[in-house]
Amino acid sequence: MSAAVVAVSGTGTGVGKTYVATALTLALASRGSVVAVKPYESGHGGPFGPDQRALAEASTIDVAELGLRVRCFPDAVAPPEAARRVGERVDLWSFLARFQAARARFSGMVVLELAGGIHSPFDDAHTNAAVLRALAPEHHLLVAPNRLGVLHDARATVRAARADGLIFDALVLSQTAAKGADASCDSNARALETLVHSTPIVLEHGAVTAAAATLGAAWSAGAFRRR
Image (cartoon, rainbow, N blue to C red; front, side):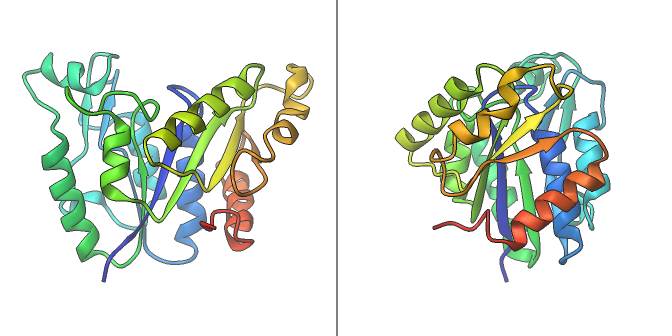
């Protein structure tokens, strides 16, 4: 018995990872047990941040039942610095030990969202890429904002990930702009068609249940399957 991990990474901060992770968690919840985890969140008073709450509400079980602990720090800086400012410490190895132990006890799906991009700091000595390499998730999604400039951001992130031995199985373009507000929105997906193994999924922000239906259909069609 071991949980399958779906990692949700982003080209940076504030690109829509939590919206995508929440929608995906809702989609997977209709197929079985699933828990969504964002280990650290900063910029909000505890005990949980809004991202962590959204993920918890979409999950079928509580992270605490798996022995996992999520933390939220008040200052809006990277988690290692945010933790230090309140006398705490973020440590890669202790997180990996807890996560892998929970993974071994759980037979469902784990949706994992890390703060920032793949090269954002996880602790003082390691980036998120180190976490992802150690966990070797069964599925790995890249979230990028569907806006002008995403062609560079997505390509640069995929190239950097490959250099670190990481592979993305799907690209989700998270769109917050109203139709017509950004002329690039209609062509970005087409321009990025060959970047990952499947056609990019454009996800307009709105009712999260509608986003869950879109991602659920893509999951059923094999869009997130590693090739």
